[in-house]
Amino acid sequence: MAEPILSVHDLRTYFYTGAGAARSVDGVSFDVMPGETLGLVGESGCGKSVTALSVLRLVRPPGRIEPGSRIEFEGRDLLALGERELREVRGDRVSMIFQEPMTALNPVFQVGEQIAEVVRVHGKGSRREAQDRAVEMLESVGIPDPARRAKQYPHELSGGMRQRVMIAMALVLNPAVVLADEPTTALDVTIQAQILELLADLQARLGTAIVMITHDLGVIAEIARRVVVMYAGEVVEQATVATLFETPHHPYTEGLMAAMPQLGGGMDRLNVIPGTVPPPTAWPVGCRFHDRCPYAWERCVREHPPLYALGDGHVSRCHLAEEPERRGQRHLPLAAQQSA
Ligand SMILES: Nc1ncnc2c1ncn2[C@@H]1O[C@H](COP(=O)(O)OP(=O)(O)OP(=O)(O)O)[C@@H](O)[C@H]1O
Image (cartoon, rainbow, N blue to C red; front, top):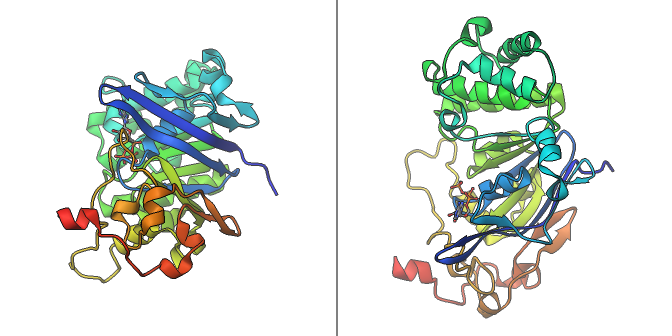
């Protein structure tokens, strides 16, 4: 079996705010294999973005990656690298695509120049070569008339085009891993499908591993092979996409699935998981999902579940792994529903 290209091990990223330590990422581990697409899914506030920012060490104070966390990339410990070595990895070997290209692109530079700059900063070509490379890249992300578009400013492009520019920028140095943080959320559905297709196509051509961060299981179903489900700063389930969709184990995953719009399902109200993600300064004791869980019992309030192995790499942070007969029964009042 191949070695992972990226290994995140027991990652803890805390923010030291006035309200106490926000344990936004709280012991997260997962591996990314070369060339694969791994989905990272969960509701807003579960710690997905902070996980990605931590991998690139872009977390700023009052945020801090806690001692004991380990991030290995191509066999090197990213958390031990000096600033210079880190800059060589960032953008070159590991890059990121952000949700909102308007904030990630510089409004006062032509888009071609911005892509060329990435090439130059990493010493991968002269000014001229970098510009040619930028135009080539714009063409490969499906931008028509790329030489002309390269001379335009971000505000002159549509949202979908800007996202293509971001993708071009993230891929120009042919990185081994791309962290894509909700890259299609701000786009309408048709453009969203085109961008996902583009990413899948580029990945097949370039062999890049993609970590696709999203709150949308539909996106995961379309593009990923394996999926990591996050809740309240932790991994709560991990499986192949096929296993997760056929036999989800964690009640949180079940809830996310029930909330997915069904094809042809009309305008019926979607099932939503009752309650909200608690603030990271006050994760519940026991299972962090217990007050929103349809099956929780006393043990869930007391005992924080470990990641139970269910076979074939499927893991779930739920005591149902040991007491499956409890599924379908509710033993505690559903606090969030009562207060609603
Ligand atoms: N700079 C910061 N200071 C304090 N808390 C922060 C900071 N950045 C993130 N957090 C907190 O960390 C938690 C996790 O945020 P994160 O953005 O990773 O969630 P997410 O799952 O990616 O959600 P979203 O999809 O909304 O980005 C949130 O509760 C957020 O408030």
